[in-house]
Length: 457
Image (cartoon, rainbow, N blue to C red; front, side, top):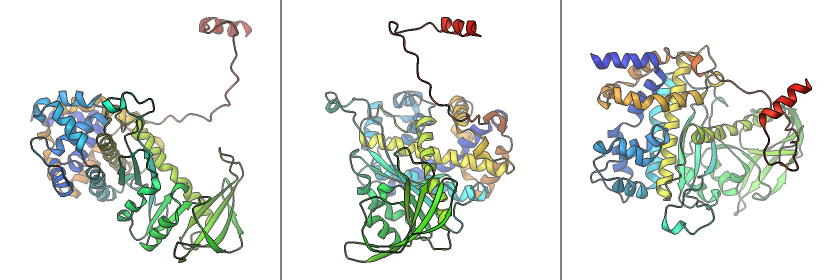
């Protein structure tokens, strides 16, 4: 009875935090994580430290409820049951394939729930599943390894390719590489298991290779990829014709017949956007290649390509709101595992926003609700929530059917006071003025400068 009263109090005061904890119970259920480990582990095995416990510890770090792995261990030392050295050894050896499987697992678990909640955003292209592909190099770590202490250059622990589905907001897949200097194109063959019929892959020009375009087309996938200047070849092309304009420039279209190494041709449309204003790199024209049917107009495709920046927003949230790069983890496997746990946590936050869309359909959630304030509340309230309500208080949510859990989630989401998380977008940036230089002074008094300004008025 007392636990029910405490539970209701948290639902009333911090429904966002309760929703997140409930979703974690579904997406990161220990039994499912152990099954994932048993199915995916190649060389690792379990003695005392469970894979689910390792995920739990890392989740506390990436969600900023604990400042470090050691602090997260200290908080749950009695429950973990092994030494901190054993925990670090486990992190050091976690296989990147397991970390990637964790991300796919959360996406597969949450995607049907998001659709049941009616919490998706309008599809970018009706009848297709849009997937945005981009790479991310993990930031340099501290030089905690003996081999790094005499190295002046920044040590990179690895890199990833991330697949984002903007309709649900979920990172549906990730490809991990321990070598931080590997060219992203060398990882493209690992994308093939993620390609499905009726997919539309959007990517930057670094992914515009003969192998990738022909491979997507052979597997029934569609693409909208910016053309690279020197990675493709063709013998035939049609005349270019003007087909309209967008808000940023005039759109032209033509047909190219690309050739692979064996001379096999692939017919594609080249959409060229001649910009009214050049890019920051001074480029006047952007060329896009696609094998989407002609009924999808070229100006529509030029506008659709701009959604590629959605994944940059995901990377920003992973870095600023979560802690996807734990710079104390210098071993590549540990650093990649931390990044993948952050992606899994991001998927849970995407489901939280989906519940808000379903509960408040009259509100433009993405335009009005700030991810920053949501993350701040989670970081501040979550530790207290777990002290007041032990894990046993959440187990009943994991046993609910999907429809019952969705109904519970909507009920909690309706109690969220959206004004507490209101965005405050800044105005347009002003030109940076030329700074006043002082020949003989390295510092100035702010009070004196304010006094001078007042005297002029």
